[in-house]
Structures are given as structure tokens and as C-alpha cells.
Length: 295
Image (cartoon, rainbow, N blue to C red):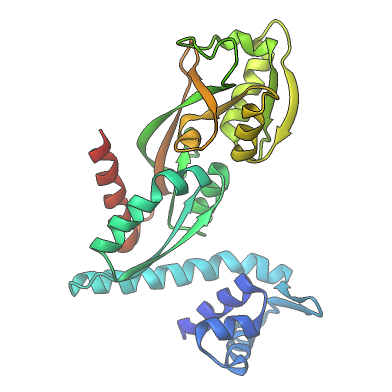
């Protein structure tokens, strides 16, 4: 069995095109077509649906895809383990990360990682915490940054506690205070992240909405942090964001901790029950060293 044809199949699925996959892999289009056909003939299944709009997975392909991903992942891990035994640091790692982690932490982490292990390549996929967890469980990425709580299938290492902050205009009456009473949110116009934009903040506001005597006035819902900070700066309302998101942002806003501190726990996660690849293990070591140095 040639692993290359399965790797080529995954690239075709990723790009939705045999010609694009062939270009990226350095093969001819006919060679990639033959590889895909060989897999279908080997298993007696039609894995791809071909139409004028391109290629998509058939119902059989959807069922078989996780097994093909696992097969290619195991092969990559075996190659990395063999290289490790020979004293050569090579490999490939798929990392899931939300935008705030990618902006605030990952540049320094990845710089250190590439300096230590120049032979290990990586692919960074930006996604929300819940999507990252799902991708880890499905074997679609090797590791990722998520927040607690998490599923039983996840092996989680805590890295940092991140505070949720009240985000106020600079001229807000409570801008000069030391804290912001959480009950005051019932007297504000709230600019809220959509649930897809930030699940932790949405859950916090939903719980708070049920606890407050007066319901919150949700002025609008926005799906990105930058837009929210710009709207708060303009005096359109107040919001709640994580402290990590607001770091190094060029907005004239004021951040206040709540009278009862509210945190979310952020960590690095892998799938429980399977040993991470050598490349993944090395990346996690660098991540842990980075956060140890911050303490």
C-alpha cells in the first residue's frame, strides 16, 4: 500500500480540485487522478462526487475520511519517531488557535520553536476554542489552544488564567474607578460578541442576564473584537472582552476588572489516549517553557 495516494487524496479533498492538489504536491494531474482512482478501486467505493462545481466528498467519502486522516497521521508520526531515533528533528504539526492567541502569544512561541527545530514545519489554523477542541478530537489537528471546561477526550495543560474585563469609553462615569460593579451592566447599552465570535463571553453574559434584576439592554451583536472596541471608543455602549484580546490595541478605551473577578482558563490541548507525535511533543515543550518564563 502506498501512503502517497492517501496523502494526495487528502490534498484533493482539502482543495476541492485535482489540478490544484497536483500543483501543490508537485505531481502531474493525471498522476493524482490515478492515485484517487486506485483508492476507490482498492476499496470498491466511490469516495468523491464530481460535478461542474468541482469535487466534493460522497457519502462513502465522508465516512472514510476520518480513517484516511488517521492513517496519514500515523504514518507521519512513525516517520517523526524514526527521525527522532536517528537524532534528526523533522516533522510537521497542525496547530489550532483563536485570533487572540495567534496575535498575542504565537509569534514569539513559533519564533522560538523554529529556532530550536528548523526542520519541523507547521500549519496554523485559526478557529474558535470550541472548534479547536472538536478538531483535536477528530484528529484533524495535532494540538491547539482551548479554554476550560473541555471534553473527557481532551488532555489539557493549563497555561494562563485570562480575566474578563468591562470595556468602557474613556469618558464613562466609571472610567476613573478601580473596579466595575457587574450589576451596573443592567444600566448600560451592551455591545455583545455573537456566540460564534466568543463563546466564553456569550455564556457569561447569558448567565448574568438571568441573574440581574433588570434585563440588560443588548444594543447590538458584533462578530469581531476590533469592531466592538471601535464602537465602545465612539461611545455607542460598553462591552465585555477577555484581557488577552484587548492587549496592544490602538483604541482609546478603558478596561476595568469586575468587582467579582471573572476568569477563563486557557491551555494547550491534545487528544487523550494517543501519544502525540515527536514534533507535537517538542512544540508543547516550547509552549510550556514560554509560559514558565512569563511567571
